[in-house]
Image 1 (tube, rainbow, N blue to C red):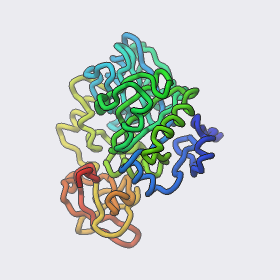
Image 2 (image 1 turned 90 degrees about the horizontal axis):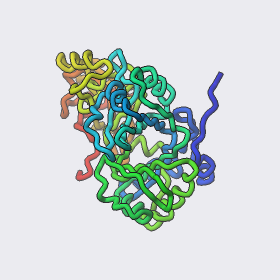
Image 3 (image 1 turned 90 degrees about the vertical axis):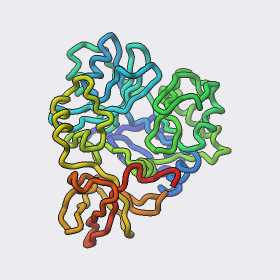
Image 4 (image 1 turned 180 degrees about the vertical axis):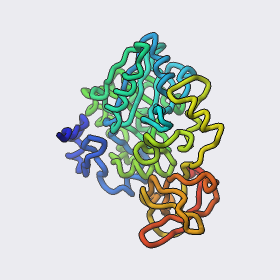
Amino acid sequence: METAIKTVALDALHQALGAKMVPFAGFNMPVRYSSDLEEHHTVRRGVGVFDVSHMGEFFVSGPEALNLIQKVCSNDASTLSIGQAQYSCFPNETGGIVDDLIVYRMEEARYMLVVNASNIDKDWAWINGHNSMGADLENASDAYSLFAVQGPLATATLQKLTEIDLSSIKFYHFTVGSMAGIPEVIISATGYTGAGGFELYVKNEHAEALWKAVFEAGEAHGIKPIGLGARDTLRLEMGYCLYGNDIDDSTSPLEAGLGWITKFTKPFINSEALLAQKEAGVTRKLIGFILEEKGIPRGGYPLLNEAGETIGRVTSGSQSPSLGKGIGLGYVETAYAKPGTVLRVGIRQKQLAVTVTKLPLYKKDA
């Protein structure tokens, strides 16, 4: 039996704005309002708002909260102070990744884990299945809306709505306070675009009021609603992984370039095997690349060496609005992963030249 598609709290508002709605991760989501290109540039140059309320929020609390998080997460959450967030992943028992997530330390013994929409049920089962120590768990995914207010004018827009000094919130830090007269908004200096800005977690009953206040505050800055289409090109320019494309149950965090969130300072699920992999060296690596010829790479296309032998495959690809070139991410044999290496991507009957490029693919000062 097919599961009914879910809707975010502001579904009717997005439809009234003329959004093209598509099923995504089990939710009816806005993919674009105008054009992907226009929305992409709005975020890079000004300010735009994504409704990403499909994401999941779990609260872990009590005296055993940290012990559970340390067990299931690759990163070291013991280093977090209250008001700090951390990118992490759930390693599985076979060398892959259950999901990537952000861990927020809300209080002394209370954490929020923000997980991908497509993995909410899977992650909830995973964390409960490993909760042998008896931490308190709450799945609050259906109670929260999440708006990503992104772009160089995001701070100027949101500052009109709060007395909190937003410029003082460092990257990957957050505060909880009043915004637009709405109490207890989680104001997080995080995002998936590389353009700066904040992510706002708000209870569903206040979601519409906050959305409208943000748009009123941003009117002078040319604020626009932004869909998932531009979200994908923005994250791809930065080389940010998308679960299900660039990382999944079969990709190791070390292969995916996520060694920096894989801390062997404490034991975690499958840490011994991952440490052995680190010491032996990985046989494939996730790379970013830029096309040297006209063409658009897509997930699944082969990556080849100059002799025409397949040495990997594309996991994400698109036309970069900022660079005006085809870009992508993909896994290749380690010998071909060094920046500057020239490879080829098979697009239909052609083999087009690509250059392995250090991430991010889009440099702000370029």
